[in-house]
Length: 109
Image (cartoon, rainbow, N blue to C red; front, side, top):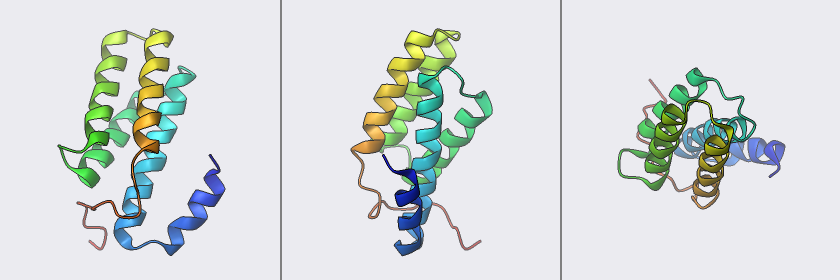
């Protein structure tokens, strides 16, 4: 994954795309942090809220984020559980189409 390229691509997207890319970066940071067992609880909460606001309760990413949060919460810091949950979250992020994702956040205020 080339984060710099993805970041530059944000400028060519409609507003809803920008919101969804923000959710993507947030989830990627959490997933990679989990794989290294170094993710902060506040980062998980922030990513979960952003994903829920962006995609709503019934989207695949929202369900995967909820599974991830449950796994990390119940895993009590066990790195092997975090690693599996991080892998699963990464797969969910990568199989989602971002530019056409419906935004449920009013970014204009």
